[in-house]
Image 1 (spheres, rainbow, N blue to C red):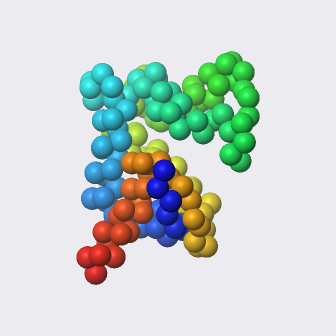
Image 2 (cartoon, rainbow, N blue to C red):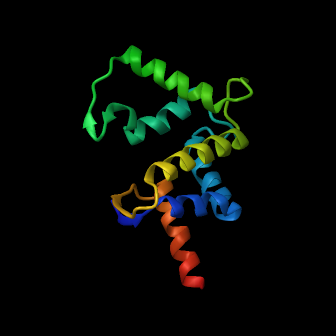
Image 3 (spheres, rainbow, N blue to C red):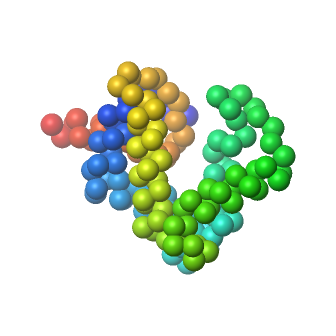
Length: 138
């Protein structure tokens, strides 16, 4: 896992830079779309969130939830993404929800730089890479 120093402004700048953000979201969307039909099913969205184990932890510590609790949470996440309630998540719905999630993360990070470990090819890694590219071009 790469370790980087990041703050909220790094994430906000990434989200606001349409070209970088859209390119990253498309790459993520198509990596989640395992059947390549151009939309994300409930199972594909769930599998993506299961990979990051975010719902099985509280403040980084294991937090055992029953299968019923997890199903309810995953269903809620899917409903949040599927804004037109047609049973699938399209690219625009995915992009809009990820924008909201990343901006919430940015506001949570605040302006104090934090050293964090990120997933290879994760959203925060994309934000940090965007900042590196921007700084090297300057």
